[in-house]
Length: 181
Image (cartoon, rainbow, N blue to C red; front, side, top):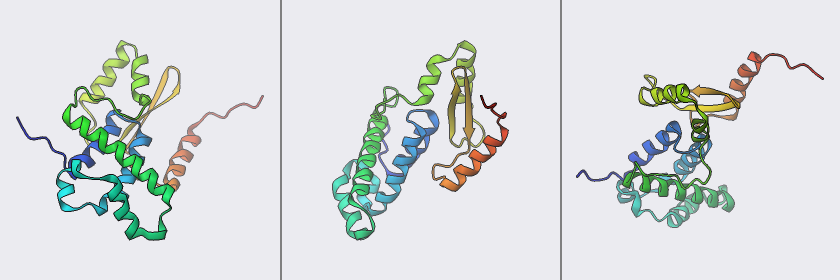
């Protein structure tokens, strides 16, 4: 049996793919990725090879010593919680991908939408999952009506607020003018 990979690179791939595949909500994926980017720069070499060896409280302490007063304690606590949840999910997924359920709490929107699909939509969704686009960047399902889902693709997990506003402006330009009543 092949040895399981608990490395930092496997963790980063898990973060990317879990948001794309609907295992976790895209917003949760982005938040966890940001926390990981902030904290994991302080990992020691043996921790990078096996993330099960990481003591997240101690990692946060290392990060705080370097950042000093530039990071607020409440932000550090949020990073701690997000990275803890992400690592917990990663370890459980690595050990049992088929039986994995995120510790995120609520069902991801993609799972909720999939449960409402009729047979035709379910086949189309399965086809998309099995044969993703050639460069499968993040595909986010956005239910806009009870019977309609719109998919956004190639949205970076590190998108800025300005970039989000630019995309929103394009979408708003496509809308039919609402009539005032």
